[in-house]
Image (cartoon, rainbow, N blue to C red; front, side):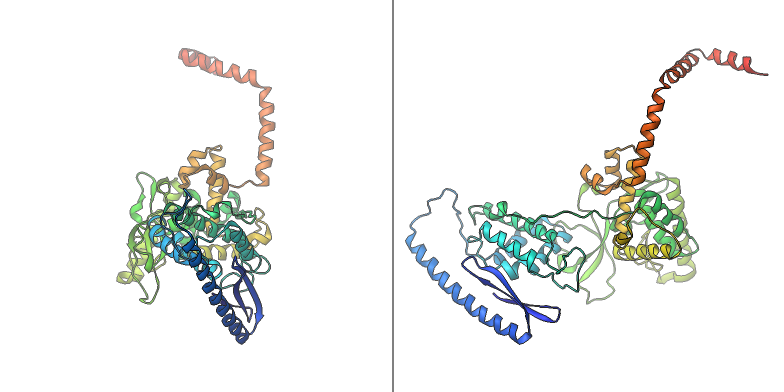
Length: 480
């Protein structure tokens, strides 16, 4: 059916035309014009559906038996919207985590149901899908678009990344529909997706990020030192923002010098709490009964995420200092009012610090440092606003690739990645790296000319190890 959307003070009506029911949008209307057009198109849509229904009933009477070996055993008259709700209920709730479930269903509600959901799934063709994707890219505005959003084109239309996310869900859904024998084949398998080039997330080089660590290292200020330790954990342990916020003091083993990373801090919709894939260890006290979400500590999305991160002495000193500061605040300031959730990274009153809060604090520090004369060159000036707390993970992966001489497996384990391509995706290359490579190759070339003396030295060491008395005689000979 036709729908109305508001954009830049005007209204647009999306309706459907042709036998393929391709979406059409008419924009620049007043509210009354939009309502009249919507009602008119709804009446036309109703008439078209009645005619289509009569045509199908007539065709059914002419069919005695299905002759195709691939024909569905359980034909359905469900529309795309009706089927997707069934698919999400039967499949999505079993196989999807909270984040993917929420984002996928939102995409269906915002972009699929209003513009493509009226088609019966047995009627959908690849050509219709291609037309629909073209409509999304060229005409369909982003939902709740307030000006030009990050990642959108100049007109604020749906991005190629969103189209690909939509396609991924619909292709999976139609594969399942084929297994359920609702359809004969999956038309999404041959759909033409818009070209998409994933933008690389900007991140500071390890050297420049270490400036930030030095700048924030101030134990006299609890909130500043807390963000300092959070950044240090993110850097030295290659964590994610939710993992940093989910760390608790029992996860810290000072003797073994490890942090046990196996849970994440997240905000979850109350209606999703019963999803089978969602494992919750702890639910924080609800501050407002009217909130639709709750803050929880939950299990990570993959088994590879759980790991014991090794700590260096520097990290142990920082964690011990932060623990001491928290104990002093509890004793001297908050007492029984302190919400002791055993969190390592937390607000002064013990409440958790969400990832968006870590991100905001990190950005504030960058702005402050720039105002105080720091110049970051590893990230272009126009990209500095795109640097977020999660970007520190890239600096960490880059540093660990350098110090491990490219040991992919070691860096994978450190960051909780299941695939090596994720390490390659996160680690960066900077101009200084190219200079170091060139210098190293030159050094190795010059060392090649010293191969014989090096071999002689190694042979001498072997002789001394085999005959220790020679070393005593040699030392005695060179004494003045």
